[in-house]
Image 1 (tube, one colour):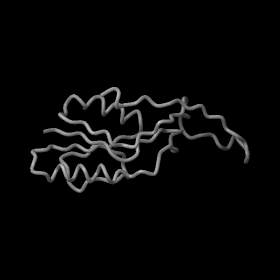
Image 2: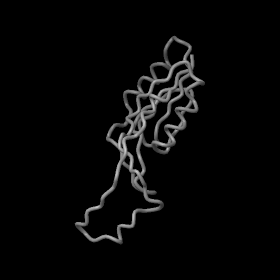
Image 3: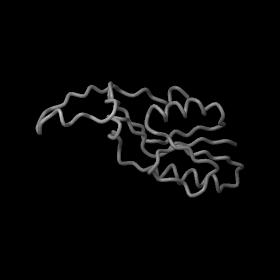
Amino acid sequence: MKILISGGPVHAHLDAVKILTNKFKGGLMARLAEELSHSSFDCDVTYLSSKGSKQPVICNEYIHHNGFDDYRKKVVDMADDFNVVILGGAVVNLIPVNPWKGKFPSHNYKEGDEINIPFTIAPRVINEV
């Protein structure tokens, strides 16, 4: 049985170096991937996460994503190749409408300036699988 598991945070880019994320690291999903990999069932486990999140000690394949858009594309593109898809990643739900290209130009602002950044609610990847 082929199983795809996602775990850990799935961030959104504010600019080329800043991200919006949460504090979850993916420990529960990494443990599930390990348990399924060690089980008496014939499981081929692929684990999808961001770099820096908790990784299972053992699974068949590790795939890293680079934020929401990459995560979404990988899940949607791969889902049909698996018997089971477990989406346990902590997916960001607020995404900047227009992330800055390059680095945010903070030198153009002074201390205390308010910056209006419009956000949109992220599409729910689970609805696309």
